[in-house]
Image (cartoon, rainbow, N blue to C red):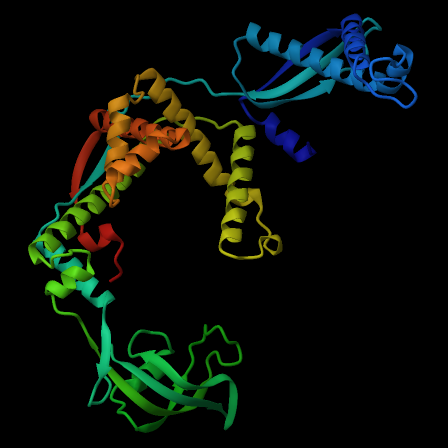
Length: 437
C-alpha cells in the first residue's frame, strides 16, 4: 500500500487497529505438522514417494511450512479478536509486524475497516415526486405513426427536392480553387434536412431537381472537426441525379401483418400496441420512481463507505467497461481504463447497497416466493412463449437470484413510498419515452 493510500485510510472513521500476539512454539508445532503431512506424499529424486527422509523434507520445504503456519496463526488470532469485539470487517486487513518483543512470541497489528453501523432514518420529511402517465388513444396513434416512419419507402419524385426527400448527388468541394480532401463524392445518398451535412450544404439541397447542377458557397462552423476547414468558406459544385419522396405504408391489413398480426386485424393490432405501450410506460415509470427512492434513502442516511469496498467496486466497474469495449470489437488493450474514473459512482453504489441491506433487514422486506414469481411472469410477457421463459428462470439459480433482488427492491420502493411525502406529477409522453424534440 502506498503512503497516499495509507493516509487516506487513516482519515476514515471506519478504520480500526488491533494488536495480536502469536506464540512461537505454536507456529513451530504447526509447521512441523505440515512438514510431516508433506513427507507422506512428497517426491524427491532417489526416493520413493513417502520415503523421503524427514530431515531432507524439512530442509527443502521448511521455509514454506513455516510461512504457511505463521499465516494461519495470524489469521486465527485476527479472527478471534474480531469475534471478541463483535466487529464486521470490510475488505481484508493490512498486517503489520511489530518490533520483536521476545523469542517466545511474535506481535502484529492489523489495520482494517469495518462496516458502518447506523439505524435507518425516518423518511417522513423526505419528498418524492412520483411520475404518472396513462396511455390513451393518442399515444397509440403516435406509436403507429412512428412504426410507419420506420417502414418508409422512397419512390421517384417528379419535382424539386423537399425536406425529408432522399436525393442522390455527385459533389466536388474546392477551397481557394483547389479540391480538398474529403470534399468529393459520387452517387452520394442524402436525406434532405436530416443534418448529416453542414447547414449551408443542407439548405442548398432543397429545391434541387433531378439533372440540375448547382454551385454555391459553404461556410464551415468554427468548431468543425476538420481543423483545415473550420471557419472557412469553400465552394461546392453539385449535380442532382435522383430525387425520391418518402412514402409511408397505409394503416391496413398488410401493415398489421408486418407487425405480427397474422390475420391483419387492425383492432388486434391497436390492442397489442396499447398493451406493449402500457408495459413500457409502466417499466419507465417504475425506473424513475426507483431512482428517486434510492436518492431519498441516500440523502436520509448519509453514511461513510468503507474504502476497501469502494476500491473493489471501482475495479469491477473498470473491468466491466473493458469487457464492454471488447464486446464492441475495440482493442481494449489500447484504451487505458482507470478504476479511479469510477470512484464516485462506486462510492454511491456501495453506500446504497449498505443502506438497502439495512432497510431490508430492519424492516423485514425480504421477498417471498409469490413476489419473485410475479417479477418473472411480468418479464416473461414480452416474449412469444411466456411459460418457456418462466421455466428457464426457475432452472437458472443465477436468474432466480436476479429476480429475487428485483422483488426485494420493489418491496423497498413500496415501503419508502408509504413513509415519505409523495407528490404525483403528470409526465409528458415524449419525455417519458426519451423521444427527441
